[in-house]
Image 1 (tube, rainbow, N blue to C red):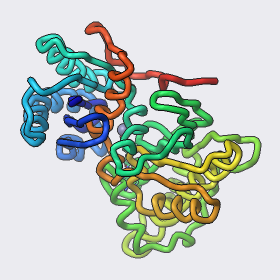
Image 2 (image 1 turned 60 degrees about the horizontal axis):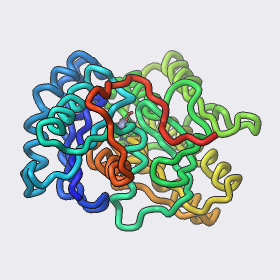
Image 3 (image 1 turned 45 degrees about the vertical axis):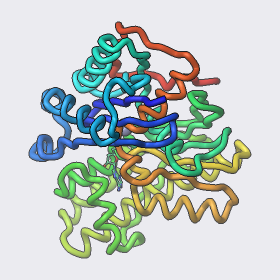
Length: 338
Ligand code: KG4
Ligand code: ZN
């Protein structure tokens, strides 16, 4: 069964075709980097307009690269939320129109379930149950995944998401947008021990929750005191900030995996592309005896293959969304068990 996935929740317009929930036939992502870069962040109205311009060419490219036509598609999966409503609506309406015109089964997908499903496209996906650390621009959560679409959210950020912290700190340091990848690159030549930042929410009673707004403020205070660093000092500051974020993510994952008595951990979402997080989580896995699964970097950031993968498992269970399905800015992760 071929599933067409569509995604436009933020600043990437994406379309993909996957076969039987496993094999990626095409995976096309158009970034709006140039549109938003002058503003230092995503401008929602500009994002919506760019999605409108991009969605059909991206869809055509996905079909072409897969070597298929709409006649071959067996189902359509589209991100329903969370995200920017105007942006979400573009892929959602496109998917609904296609499904209606072609009489295809259609399903709306939660964006985080998409991130959680990217790993199922890898050669050796994690078995169930496993622990998932979801780290993106909008979310930082620890989730126990009991089956496809069956989740227990163990903890989440109480304020900023990890990716948001990367982006805000990058903006503060004049590194532009999006900032995570720039901080990752600069950190490679920096000293992670150069500046000591607080590790928030690491005390016992904080459970599996996270907090990143204090760290952001600590970087701001450092810059107020010392000015925006240049050269080696900039690399050192980036490395110190990144090491702090990663240390807390890894420490909390270790604690949760031990308590939940799990042996498989996946890391997903845009921040899972971070080279330091990938390396440190693998090291922790080796030390503590859990296996770590991280999708390739391009499938950590937003893409439609992950949406098609999540949609595939819902479609084969017989799930269908009505054509009245609306885009949702906020949407709880489905399949949550208390
Ligand atoms: O999952 P994603 O593409 O979009 C959301 O669902 O939010 O995640 C985007 C986030 C941004 O905050 C971006 O700065 C961050 O992922 N990111 C990274 C890296 N690549 C992307 N953060 C740290 N290191 C990276 N290499
Ligand atoms: Zn995302």
